[in-house]
Image 1 (cartoon, rainbow, N blue to C red):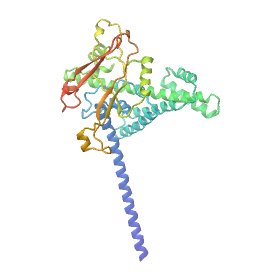
Image 2: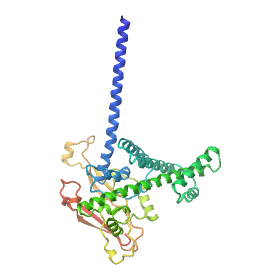
Image 3: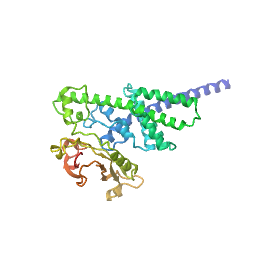
Image 4: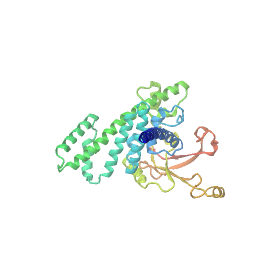
Length: 382
């Protein structure tokens, strides 16, 4: 009888443990789901406040398309290709983007998976770029030969090259040229991911141009966001409008000098209290364009930073401590803008301060006259 009692108590205890384990699993699953959904919210907040991180710029266009609550209705699309956003990141930054992209990938699975391929390829491109930065054994001449070999290869050709490399590595694992073929494989994976991302990126921009075109026609108002992309499927009127303003909304400077200048500045990293600062306003037509219409406009590259810190005034000293500090305050900005192709370098770039219109104030509750726009100007071709 005592034995039966013990067995009943043991069975009851096991059942309680099983239920507790199920509740814990459900709680853990709900917590993970909550954190995944918070990822989108954090990205939106950082984009709106001008503190965007690489993952936010990669997600920005998709967030705009899926912006059911119109939180990003005044944001311009991200026209940079994913590779442009990723190529100068450090190995640790690429690892962080990979982890964040996996979170977005899980969110896509829950929401129907329309952009699942996009986040898969972002992860693959990050992994390939990180592997390339990690591999120090490849001689620069070999790396150059690999780039030349893979240049302008189609997706089908890249898939064929990858199959060929896998067969070779499987048959001849100790071959003398295995370092070369390993480099070919890594760069081919990156090139394939980049090519697929380019196609998806264009698809997203096409969707946006149609969306903004229909909204503009519906409201009978011009929309500055639609001018950032050119969609062959949009209306003829919209396409003509984009073509007229294409010179005004120039592409980023693609010269090697500008790319190197940005890379050198980025390699310096961030000091304590610094964050990258990416807020833009719509560009104005430069005054020199009227007399030099034959020159193609170029948008300068930049790498701006915002400096924040604690202000220990009397109020904060009374109400906060070093362990529980007050909110950080903006203490200054650092603007790094690169103009390597100035036709007349003797004339330096300048800047002016303008009053921000009400629509550009960070919050509807903020008075517009508290905010200023700093506008940088330079000579042709910028």
